[in-house]
Length: 332
Image 1 (cartoon, rainbow, N blue to C red):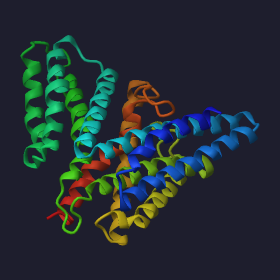
Image 2 (image 1 turned 135 degrees about the horizontal axis):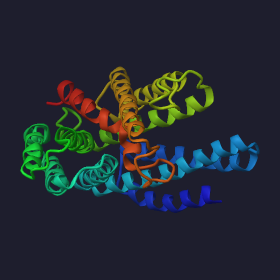
Image 3 (image 1 turned 135 degrees about the vertical axis):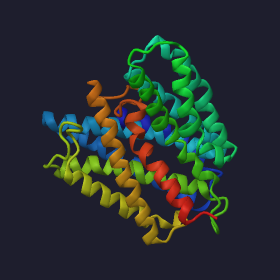
């Protein structure tokens, strides 16, 4: 019954978020709810019917993922209910937790502690403050220029030169991928798109939905038809069948949901394809880092999905590309 009890509880959390939402944004949220309900019922039925040991493990893995999706959908739905500031704060918290996982996985030395204080409690909040203030000019260069230069200077002042380059690169890489790249997602809310005023939350929702559906569909296609592994030493579960099936399916869904975006159906399909391809690349790169560190997951915050980075690895790479494509081609 756990498969159904948790979704019922979280359904009560999501429903209030739908009340003030009208039009296409509400339809998107309701569509996600329907998918989750169907998935939960399917998982419960399969847990009763499948008897083989391998089959039961697969079904249990699927049900754990579904429960995690209910939780994440509830959090994201409530953030949309709160509005632009709430959404920005949510992504700021996600970045903070992801950066914490990354730094924990790539140990530093005492000489880095002062630098890390600045990274966690000054630079990260400042980046999201700039995003919330819609100060695009500074938000887009603050980390890759000013923080990039500040970090090695601050570390050098501590006088610890052992593995200095490696330690500095770890901090800079973590800040870039976990904070800078992710911050491009809420930055979508500040774009001025002709004929699309006041609707940017739908674009953000569409982006996250396509990126995450691609991950799910690649897993489903891989489990169903996967035979040929793409990079077995990096990510043993990624197959060409799963990749092609997931990317094409998510692209088709993104094109079908064009009405929630400022794009035409063809443009929505092209954007969805860019999101899914960059998302796959992000997952592969972040998996390579895990293999290098000898771990399966970045953490255990989300049941069934490992850590925060395990869930947003596709967003890390897709968000900046999607933001700049949208800004260049469609923003005023």
